[in-house]
Figure (tube, rainbow, N blue to C red):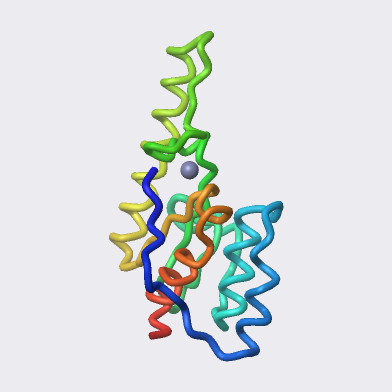
Amino acid sequence: MPSRRREGFWITTDEATSVRLANIRQKDTKPELVVRKMLTALGARYRIRNKDLPGNPDIANRSKKWAIFVHGCYWHRHEGCQRTTTPTSNREFWEAKFERNVVRDAVGTKALEDLGYRVFVVWECETEREPEAILHRLRRLLRFR
Ligand SMILES: [Zn+2]
């Protein structure tokens, strides 16, 4: 997976936001919590565990119509990611199971988009490797800039 980090890429924030964001760059935080803390730092409002929305997005804002999935690389098959391994025994079983997950994700995304939602996927490994890039994309998603 090529890094999306680019040279000359910096996020300008006011001091208070920087302080709040400093707390989210820790390695052992759960991926979804990382994203939620970023959203809070950016001043976004959201609801979690949206069981009544298609695909059950982890984080969503109904009035602003955006939804975020925070995906574990293994179960949701992050393409090209080294965490996307397949067990060697019962391979067919696992491949079928993984395929169902991928299809379910695609169906959920499509259904949300049909409802006018902007859908955003954050991968577990990105929250550890490139939180600044996620933050940048979240800002765009939220139209903070
Ligand atoms: Zn990954």
